Image 1 (cartoon, rainbow, N blue to C red):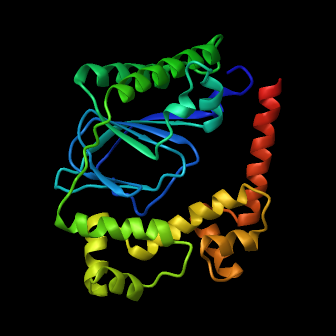
Image 2: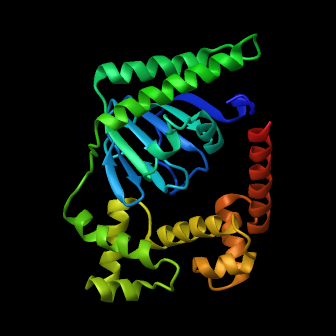
Length: 285
């Protein structure tokens, strides 16, 4: 962990807000660790819907689609959020203690005891309050990050419980989500889904939005964007990446990719290659 500027590879905050509905599905390049300190709400993660409960630890892997939605009048949402780059996680790992391989699933939803939660709160506060730019600060950051990861890995390996919210509409929609995940690179229409699942297309749109808080179209587009990002990290043209991700025209792909990521596909590919080269140079120093 001595080859990179650690302060650029992680961020941590205690967040508190009342209006915390996410506008849309999103994803991160970093890994997200979220310790929830309040109740009420739902978390859509990949294709599951988990309840937001106090003392629940969410670990969200890079490129996992997610969105939070509050479900009651009590809208106050308090949580610690730590983002760690894949580079930092990799450099923090050893042969015996490989954090990368231990966090392989798209997400983890882990109910904690009050004691387990307090340990993570204490480490989070130490990371937040550690004076920057002082002698030894970088080493203390490294120690605290390692302690945080070790504590999280300890509780995640001791339980696999997922607090998943279910109802009749959810059971009807989950196969639709799974179908989209298998066929999103193909041309999918509402008529196709309506016929395949024997559900009126208007009713399908309604219950899908009611259960997930986003539209079928939005989900398909986000899945295609994630696939395109993956393809652009390999030696492939922008047009081929768009076609293989399910976009019908190159112009539509470029426009949509920029809308959801903030950069063009070509720029994203260039930035990825540059970051990989930087990380490789750092690891060989």
